[in-house]
Image (tube, rainbow, N blue to C red; front, side, top):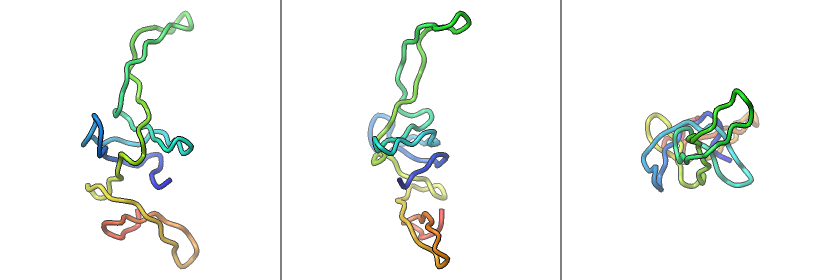
Length: 100
């Protein structure tokens, strides 16, 4: 996957269009990511232990990876790969050609 945990992304489509956030979790098998503060849903929880409160909790839900773009130097960009002369594979911003 071209987007990794810790990257800053912007949402391109959907109800959270235009919002930015940090990638918290990557789900490669489902081709989805979880971004903090984006695509939140209300989850009704029941107290499981004596000291744990129940109630309604906001929970970040997965979003399709094709609906987000990586932010590089303040602008959304596509991500590509390049192999250096020493054989290491690095991520490259398609818009500028710089190593991310």
